[in-house]
Image (cartoon, rainbow, N blue to C red):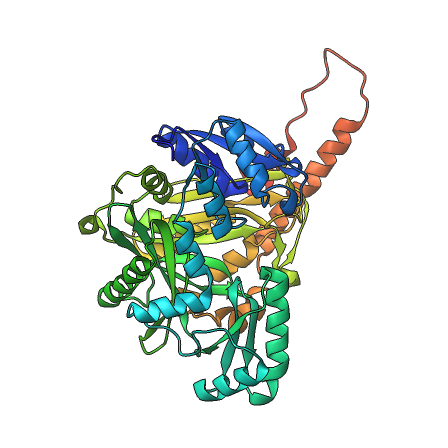
Amino acid sequence: MPEVIRRVLVANRGEIALRIIRACHEEHLEAVAVYSEADRLSPHVRAANAAALLGPPPASESYLSIPKLLDAARATGCQAIHPGYGFLAERATFARAVRDAGLVFVGPPAEAIQAMGDKTEARRRMQAAGVPIVPGTIRPLQDAAEAAREAKRTGYPVLLKAVAGGGGKGMRLVTAEGEIASAFAAARSEAVKAFGGGAVYIEKYLERPRHIEIQILADAHGRVIALGERECSIQRRHQKLVEEAPSVAVSPALRRRLSDAATAAAGAVGYVGAGTIEFLLAPGGEFYFLEMNTRIQVEHPVTELVYGVDLVREQLRIAGGQPMRVHPGTLHPRGHAIECRITAEDPFNEFLPATGVLQYLRVPSGPGLRWDGGVEAGNAVTLYYDPLIAKLVAWGETREAAIERMRQALGELVIVGLPTSQAFHLRVMEDPEFLRGEVDITYLERAGPRLRERDLMPGLERAVAVAAALLADERRTSARPQAHSDHSPIRPSTWAVVARQEGLRQ
């Protein structure tokens, strides 16, 4: 392994690549971006000290190609590779390949990734470490008949889950014995397509739990610490939409218990780096290990704002063999933070992914606001990658203050060119259940119909419609050939007209 890290290859794209590049620069490290042909004009490419083309747009031919990533790292003189999240971030084979190439993997050891990536292996290890797990099996099921026996023993309803699963893929809810055979076949088939293996296990289905996760940091010097919890219960098909820290459901005493369980979980697999232990919190206060994400999380900014710790910079420091700069005695939550994932999806059409060119973008600003974006005006959003445009994060002294700040920021945000989740998020910020903190993983099932009403934001929709119409008119006008004249009047920007008419500012 290299003695000193001077240059880091960022094996990702979009907002997380840009986030890592900035952290590298703050740590006085050079950063190398990688990109596909579709991302040639992306902001993360310009922000890096150097950039390497991987190949065509499909991820399998670019961001998921281990040989191409290793070749890029060697060609650009990198000593380390940061995987970000998604793509290869939780592939033990990638972490091992990086290590075998004589480079530093900015993440946990391959053995820890492998142990936590196998859900039944993770459940066995957690059980041995004294971390509570959801009742169910700790080994893969052999067939539908065994699934039926275990479901009867556990008690319906149950979840059939892929051993190598994540993101809700390879998962089926079973409420009665007559459903088990078809559900087992469906879960197994989906698992094969998504993860290359059809192993499935069973868990008891918990009624209306919260999804609570604990952020941990561990260094190679034996220190493992927890940085509080995040509330991630607002989900659609197991994909998180809104996250906040801390959770209104977690008392200081419960936070200590969750943190102790999380650090024990990390210690059980020899974890090093940043990671997240996910729990299900039952209405009665019992909590159960769900899984571990062996990478930086999409929602890490809310923890950073509440605890004042730059998690990505700590990742880089730990990867270089240095002790973390975070001390448990200083870790106390201050204020409240909320994150909304702004995606190129149509919330009025079952969140159907949208594609197109982002024609205009106006980002909100002000105290307590953070915009982690990966695209800018003129960039194309394609179906090749995740539809995430940016993460909008608001911090306030109280939860109420953070919600109000987020509401104002969402009202100021202007995106023209394609539908986004912006209006949906603003509606969440006004929803009585959310305002009372009464959320769990079934929240969207209950609140979804009222959150996706088409007339929910007439003011914002009117402003964006006017902006889009004026932009189209401006382009048509500029495309017409005009005779040159030294006395031609200066035509005011149509965006200034929008500002005057709709209260928007350039």
